[in-house]
Structures are given as C-alpha cells and as structure tokens.
Image (cartoon, rainbow, N blue to C red; front, side, top):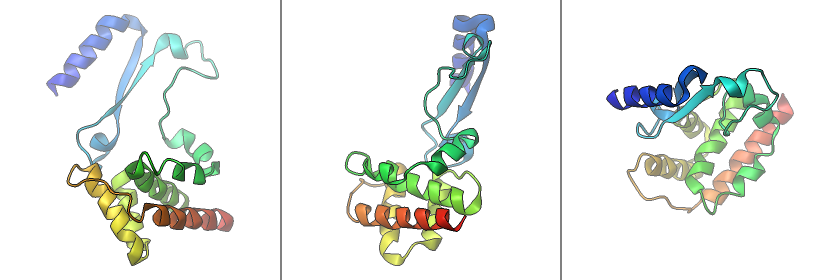
Amino acid sequence: MEQLEQLADGLRDVLGDNLVGAYLYGSAVLGGLDPRPLELDVVVRSEVNPWRRSAQTHFHYFELNRPKHLAGDPKRLADDLEWDTRKVVLALPRVSSAIATDEVHSKDSAAAWALERSPPEHRPVLERARAAYRGESVETREGARAFATYVIAEIERARAER
C-alpha cells in the first residue's frame, strides 16, 4: 500500500491538475492468478479534454473493447504461440468464455472455465500455462498448437451459433 501511495504522490507531483485519475487493473486487483504484476491506467486531462477520437492509450482488453475483440480473428493469437505460448494459451479461453458467457473473465476464471469444458487431452496444456503464469513451473510448448487449434474451432463454432 505504501508503494501505491508513493506512486500516487509522484503522479500528482508531475501532472498536478492535469491528473484525472489513476486506476489499478489486472490479475492482482481482480483476484486472478498472479498477484505481482499490475496494470495502471493513468488518465491525463490534456489527453481526454477536449475529447479526441483517439486519446493516447496502450492496448488493454476491457468491456468497451469487447466487440472489437470478439469480431477479430482468434487465429492471429495463435501466430504468437512460438514466442509467448503462455499468453496465447491463457488468452484463447478468455475469448471463448467471453463469447459463451457474455462476461469478461480474468485469466484464472477463464482457465477454470475452459478446464471444465476441454477434452482431457487438452487440459494439461492449460494447467501448465497456469502453473507457469504463477511461477510454479517452466513453460513448455508441448501440445500448445493442438490446444490452440481446438479452442479456435470452439470460438468459431460459438460465433456461428450467435
């Protein structure tokens, strides 16, 4: 908590009245898998007032972006399997669960949701990705391509049913 207070004080010192707010987001705040990393959204008055169609922002999945992500091509995520296996293995169930439940899930809740629904041969891939995310094991790519292919097919099937 002390670090957050120091960060807030620093933002106020640097931005002054231009600071609208600072918002923590991510796994730690949502009670997800990894309590260490946090995302911080800082809203700066000069970036949002007067409003411009494209205020400076870094990518983040949130409810307002949901239609854009649901309309996108999940196969593009699979392109990242070789260099960020864990991210892809944990991101695909987030897309799948969002389509199926019409809710945004944390990596942990989406992974739990997917584990209950995935065929037994794909569960170890997701379990290993969760363990690697928690820092409990080393990430492996074994089975990741087959898992991604399965989840992407499920996403496409669910979209067709909507």
